Length: 236
Length: 236
DNA sequence: AAGTGGTCTAGACCACTGT
DNA sequence: CAGTGGTCTAGACCACTTT
Image 1 (cartoon, chains in turn orange, red, brown, purple):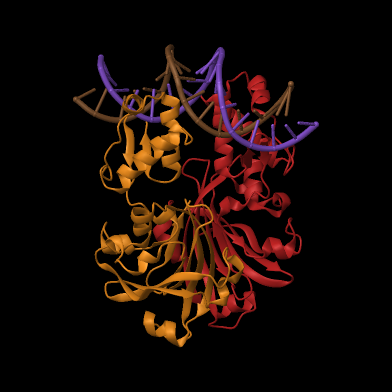
Image 2 (cartoon, rainbow over the protein chains, first blue to last red):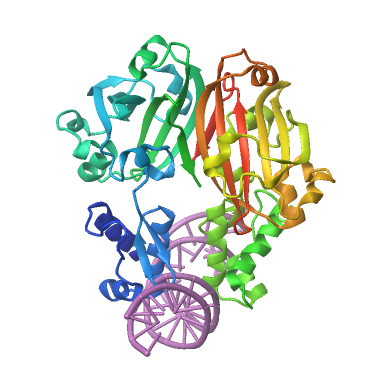
């Protein structure tokens, strides 16, 4: 077997968590149970569990067990302050509307150049989304995904409306890291219009590159956020 | 002994790294050497090393060894894009000047209220610093440190001009986590003046709480950043 | 070939959380 | 109290890097 046993256990548990078979807040099987299930020793099982803690899928409590973590917080990076509080645990007064795409195109934003891993002119799947809280638009997000045999993205709707979830379910691509640049800019006419802000009002701009479990495969996002009512928060 | 052996090994190595006895880019003693030195088994030594990787002090390479990481990047959170590139590996065209403090006072910024862990009116050591690149001011940082027997901070200068390093050297307090909120705001007259930007120009505002190795002890920072030339970037 | 880190076994004792 | 995770031992074989 090429893949280490602890990686297999890790992947197996991750699958059960993301698919909802292990519910948020519940307990994973104990270390000893997992040892039996996978014919492994505790050290091996613990290595898998330690990885899951590091990735934020579970927390552990001495004497109790491994607890499935609350929301899979998109890597603990961006979470709209108040998005979940205002909106409840499951996003439902928050809405996302797709303004454009998914559609094939090349990157036109020169701003991406210096953190681009691919050729500037390769083809990307493009997606432009507007996220709102209580009817008020807050985030404008333009996402570029290099077209490496994922053209089907443009044909079928997203799983649960989530891009990351779609990539995971349909292509087994797990987004697992990120690099970003944050700036304050003055709203252009177009951005002000979409975010219902005044022209020239301060807007948060985030340039982002996501790393994935597929070697050399990155996603790119250009995000504009009206932080008048909600701030962007992050942990760690 | 109350402290686990692997924690002791971890602390020992961390000390040698931060004090410069193990130089950046060089190799740590091999696992077997460390086993001998601490009369421990490899699993125990490896647990210490794994923690150091997680904290960013070292990287490891199969067949080679444990390599002391480059800069201790304040938790991989904020690093001025270009600060190190523009400025060389060791910060030296970047300057920090202390505008005010360290001095004792209470927090006056109501903005801190909702992520404050202490009472609003407890006493804090206050510090106001301006960071520049090539003579141009870029970051204004106001830091509040709860005054728990650290009054000496106000008496002696900072070690290497670094607050974190001072806390570590003089009080064995290690800053190891962070929570932040980011907003875009319009520059006030005062901020515009200090950052040499126009009044009402877009400024990045960061509200930050740092967690430390001392249970329940947090630092607070209010940061203003002119992102016209340099962006704030982060990894992970 | 020698040394390094990566994975794994088969035990052990302890501290903590539940009943 | 039984069950859980936290720490630790004393080995083993393998894959990778260097000489």
